[in-house]
Amino acid sequence: MQDDALIPVDTGTAELAPRRGVTHALQAMQAIVMRELLKFSQQTGRLVSALVRPLLWLAVFAAGFRNVFGVAIVEPYDTYIPYDVYIAPGLVGMVLLFNGMQSSLAMVYDREMGLMRLLLTAPLPRAWLLFCKLCATALLSVLQALAFVIVATLIGTDLPLLSLGALHALLALVCGALMLGALGLLLSVHIKQLENFAGTMNFVIFPMYFMSTALYPLWKLRESGAEWVYQLARFNPFTHAVEWIRFALYGKDPGEAPWIVLGCLVVFFVLACWGYDPQRGFGGLTKRGGGPP
Image (cartoon, rainbow, N blue to C red):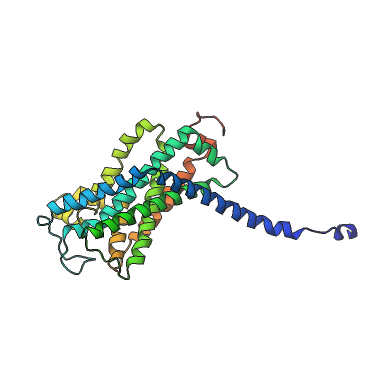
């Protein structure tokens, strides 16, 4: 016992181990995010297409319905507004939605090329690596959405960007980007081949977008007698992401929208982590009964 008491204990190494682990995790996040940013910087067509789609809706669709579609004085608005002002938050959501789904395509491509398998075998928790991919996707979504907001403002859309609710709207934007990115991550688990991507996306993007409040308020759906569409829109998580952005932008209480968005974010991400289980073959790539690669 006395001899054991004289053995020195290296407490410095024990204290440095957690710090090294945190540093390693942050370096992995930086590497993944920078990789996605560098890849995006080399794809100028991706940014152009991300802006052209909502700008066409804003410049053409909104202009055509400007004097046909009337938006009554309802929350969060204090007065009558033109249609382009109403659909602007929905078009911001469109940017987030399409980029989240495009990240799903990138995940499927990386998985087919073996990059995802290589990434997920890194000596870090699988959930952390997927979270890094999710953060990179959300960052790109937010940057593209902000670029759209700037262009929309320059062409005359009156948005309260300098109001007190702008920071709250930015928070809503980030959380919406994370939720839709997590949905794309989850979908990439079940899309086995690139050829199946287009069909799967048609059953996700368009229903989520058109059965929401991006283009028309919920009361318009109920007033027109489309009760089933109204109910689907109510339970559509994309609806609540758009409403959170819309209400936050005007400094109003978004109600239950933030909780629904955050709850869906957690559910989608947990299911995605479960899907990318190495024992299940990284999204089902390995045959049933096979072990990890």
